[in-house]
Image: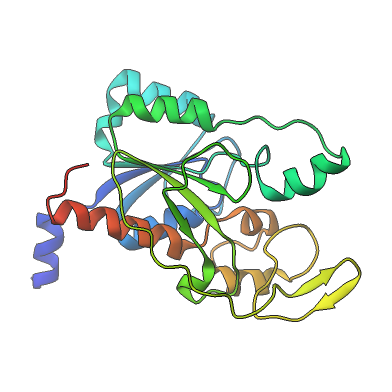
Length: 239
């Protein structure tokens, strides 16, 4: 029996609840940080790499709270649907009168998360989503092929904001009929880049579904958050 085996037996992996799980970009990062991950998504996600409960995330969270089963978790991550407040919707679709209405699930999700008494993260893209921007991460911080800024509200705990790394150039692709070259791919929409380019840029190889890739959080983001959270517990910092 190795020393590593002994450590794993003495320190069971902490469980994490991954709400609005999509294909598991966030979940994979947390798993790499040392969590056992359970996902919840209203859509069937056969590519999700961890146990998945198919159903409404708010209903699932409320049921876990009322039954006391939420106590099996140490941490909750919530990537609420972001179409209501993201920069692309606000800056393009709504300004042109395109598209329909989108539900804003941040407030009801936060209300339930506060009831759990657990530390949590609410993730949203840049835009008008009503969250505290306690932490902002960018692909360049992790050497990725996407910029993909994401904001995180931290409930019941805190970490320092790392320095933002200057971008090396533009996002590659067409803008208003003109092509721009650059070191990053545009991880959104239904056109270019190719699925394989998206996979390489995001660091995701377990799904080849474009919609899942364009919606995903790059795993290094949540791995960073998970490791920072676990470090606060090792150091004895209270939530």
